[in-house]
Image (cartoon, rainbow, N blue to C red; front, side, top):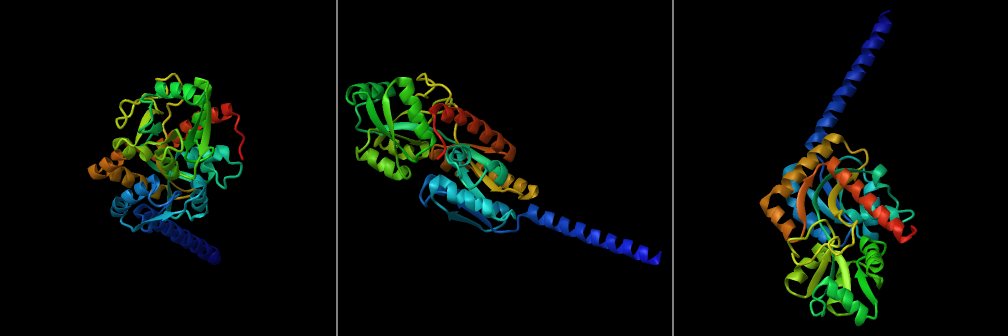
Length: 329
């Protein structure tokens, strides 16, 4: 009897110790005591990198930990996504990314090396943006209708349109435009937006499709002209550019998004803390203004809202990709 009582007390003490340890661990998650690494899937100087470094200081201040930006460029963010999957779910790593890596890559690459639904957990979103079609500032077309007419006459119905990466939303948009306006449009893939814009400004290609962040400064200086935008409404940065919906091409209203993701299994208390810190960071006037000057529509999204946004965008482009006849490579 005495032995049984001692065993019971021993087990109770061990259980109590485990509960205390779990409680302490939970508090550590909530406090976010570990340094934070932000993975970026594109080279330094690109849009995602600039955003990460803009948010680096306020996130460090609000979370109370050092924050570092680590660039892992390549394959449209695929390498960085694989790094996130391999990271420990201990609140030390997040991935700043946009729609291409999360929603498009898993649909166009047969073995991307990650599954967002299984390997990642949304940690909060902060902005949306649009893709645009642009021509050089010296191009004779001042409107999209004039561009279509120019292709039919000067181009004899054929034109190349630069895109920043193969099997990206711009490539499928080129196909949609070709089908809708009955043109022979060819997507010319580049390794990123910088060389694409370089060729556009050098008059090596007649048009290109990229994100508002890529075009906004060149539009302001007149070096290129945005003729049309995706999304459900016109953009303040390009008030004269109609949406593709206005031009009769429907189904392109879902806007790309920016968000942060953590490895699957990351503690819910840490996710909540990070999400709140992110929302406070992008609400600061100086940060918000700089993001808006990049052409972003700023608005914090909770992890659940980011998840819903991701699912809706993925579904919209799944239909478009299927209609294109594209087969994962």
